[in-house]
Length: 236
Image (cartoon, rainbow, N blue to C red; front, top):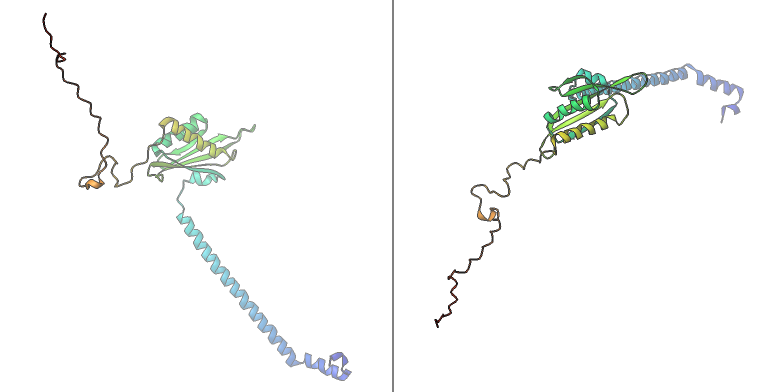
């Protein structure tokens, strides 16, 4: 029976039973357990967050250690634009061509360069009436291409100017090297494989290279008999 249908006396007793000391203690207990559960849950969240932050910090430190060190001037450049390419020429061909291209062909200002560290810092005008300039860098280091040729890995970055500028500079350097040095060298032969026209000593005859075609045999000339055709000449 709902409390609204009870007589006034029973309604009062029911209200007192719900608001008595035992009921209040029970409610306090429930609230206390809820508070403890809330505190435990908050502590767990804090602990998990601390573990995740620690793991993230360690991963960031490991990634920083894995990255190659760059000169301080290149790190301060903070370039948003870049272009990388593998040129099939040795570094001693690419480095001077890159310096001449930037200084002579493009008329840029060479701010700093270090052939041992493999970088060039340059400055170029942005073309505005205010005379503002921007900076760029060229990094070159020796490597080999997939065919095994001595090659140069080139990275160009700029911190201003048009977005296509690093790509245009890379094309200009590559074209200058090709114009000065000609076509790239042919790939070296695979290691341990002799040339096709020669066989190593001790090679079985069936594995030796086939001989080339023989020169044609010239026919022998007919014998010279002094013009005698075998006819008899009788004097009259």
